[in-house]
Every structure is written in structure tokens, then in C-alpha cells.
Image (spheres, rainbow, N blue to C red):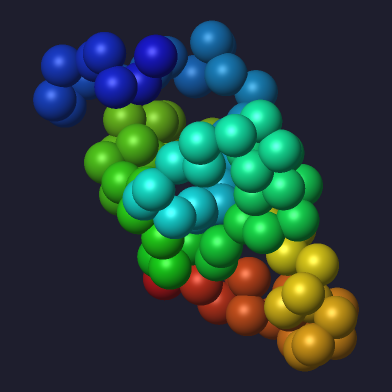
Length: 94
């Protein structure tokens, strides 16, 4: 696990094909249903939640492809898919 690596350690590129990027609340849901809901329907844009994305991604190879995966049914319905995608891209780049 990335959390088990010493600070400054890099994961060799050969061990990874890509990384997925999203954020989530710092409080972990206490039920299976809550976990499933967050994973499938309520992920946060990078930087909105409590995951140490900077710390995690600092351990990954700089040239590793990144996939942004932020399903959020309520927000994408409210904003529209194009705007949700625009916000996801902007948050991911920052």
C-alpha cells in the first residue's frame, strides 16, 4: 500500500498501468451501504475531500497516466454532464 511506503519512496512505473483520481469525505461511512453509495454515486472532486491526494500522488511516477473517476449523481444531474466534466478536469489539474 502507498501508505506503507517511506516518505519520498517512488513506486516503479513497471508495477502500475495507471492511477485513478477522486476525493472523498474524511469520515469513512460506517455501513456497507454508505461505502457503496459514496463509491458509486458521491465521490468528490479532487481537493474537496479528506484524502491526501498530494501525498499519494507524490509517490507515483510522474509519467503515470491518470484517470479521473468522480461519479456524483446529484451534482452531475444538477450541473449537467458537460459542466461536471469541466469541473472535474479543472479540479484534477489543480
